Length: 488
Image (cartoon, rainbow, N blue to C red; front, top):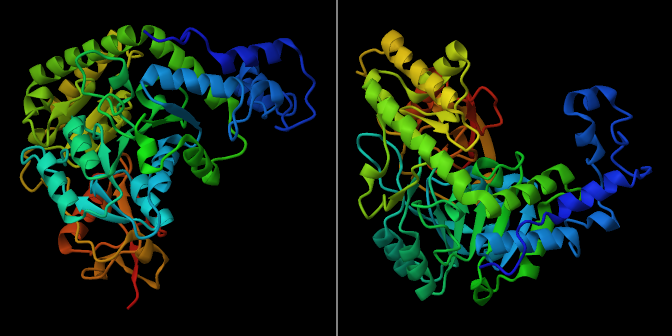
């Protein structure tokens, strides 16, 4: 039982007092409680503009918290079973970068799966750390990357005893989990820290019958997207520090200093307060909140399966290895059997049925389920998918089948990103080494990353994704017609 009072929300309570005091602002922001920008006030509401304030003594300072933010971070650490919690207002991208920068410096090795979010590879460019990629498994039917096999991780650890850390996705975008406890055991036994991208696993800390959370598994750091399944505002996240992290030189002070290298000195109190309130909500009512989301997802999955043609995959995939567990709140649906790429179903749902789902790739879609979903909305989604099958399905011959291509790494991301470069037509880039990312967003997992060899298979994947309507990002050329490669 927690010794802390999880019904408290210190930052929120301090902001209420600030509003009641009717303070006259002669500080930033310049809209001055909305009076300087009536149109914005009308759009967002007076309450929002009243509490969009700057750091001040009664409201603490995110860069060096000593009062209400510090107390709120302590409550969050307690709720999530962590030694420390840091409030992040640059999204989980910032939290992932801070994790890696806290552990790795130039030349240090870090073991990680290749199907990481671009923020992890960006961290390698910033830090100069060198990736040792463990290729995830691939499901032949779904064509998607899976988790890391513990045996593959152990092999990488034994072959790279000088590596500083092991980086793990928990879960992947599709809801697939590796054997996190086993990976922690392997890494720690060889003196390596474990860093976990838990962007899509906030609910693991409060739900029943879900995969193990990073802190419960003994990981040293975890980046948690509170704004995804935790209910806070977009761009607000937690960075959790485990109780054993100090033995790897990762202290609260060290992490705070690293965070302050890149995080804003003007932290938004709208984001900070949303973290405070959402933590309280989960700590007090999390079992009910996550239970409702799980019940909704299970029902939706069954109804979509009943349509026929779609495959709403879940725990039946578990194999005790690279699919060690599955997050059943994820409504991941394979669409290729009805002859449609996931991105095509994504577009049809939005353009024809006014339904916005999380993402679609070349073979699957993901509908993000939370406690905020209503039963009638689920019925609308199921009905729309049934109609899409009836109206738009076609023969699947000629469809690209594999979402993941194992990379050929020629140099480190940092060396490629900062090295001598030239721009070439992407159609003429085979055999060259990329200096840029190419990816579909979401989910933001690179098809190609800096330092990797460009192959015909990769170009086919990029061309196919563009033709199907994926939102392609990463290159300076916004049309993805040219790409920067190593010159030499």
